[in-house]
Image 1 (cartoon, rainbow, N blue to C red):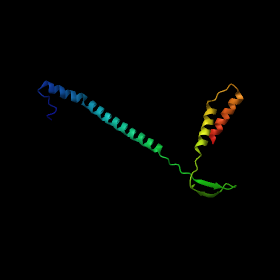
Image 2 (cartoon, helix red, strand yellow):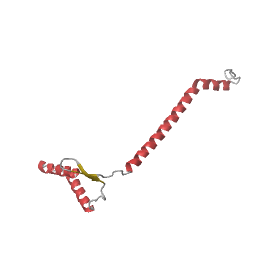
Image 3 (cartoon, rainbow, N blue to C red):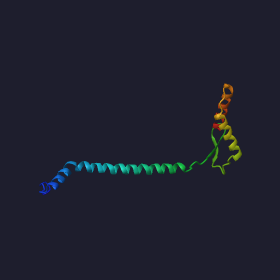
Image 4 (cartoon, rainbow, N blue to C red):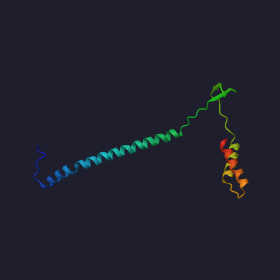
Length: 123
C-alpha cells in the first residue's frame, strides 16, 4: 500500500494526482485510437480485395437449347465465343453516340433518335 502514500516531493505528488484523475481517460483514448486504426486498416484491406475481385472475370457462358414445350433438350459450354469485328463495334458505337447526342426541334426526328438509341442498347 505504498502507492497510496503521498510522496514527499511535490512534483511527484502532482504527477501521481494527475495519473489518478486523468490516467483512465488517457488509456481509454489510446484504446479507442487503436480500435480506430485497426478498423481503418481492415476497411482498406476489404476495399482493396473488393476492387481486386471486381477486376476478375468470372462469367462462364452456358448454352441450353429448349424445345417448343419449354423443356431442355441439350446443354453445354460453347467451344469458342465469336467476337464481333472491330469495324462493326465501331459503327455500332458511332450510331449510339450520334443518336444519344443529337438534338433537334422536330419531335418526330427526336423520337427516332431515342428509339434508335434504345434499340442499340438492347442488343
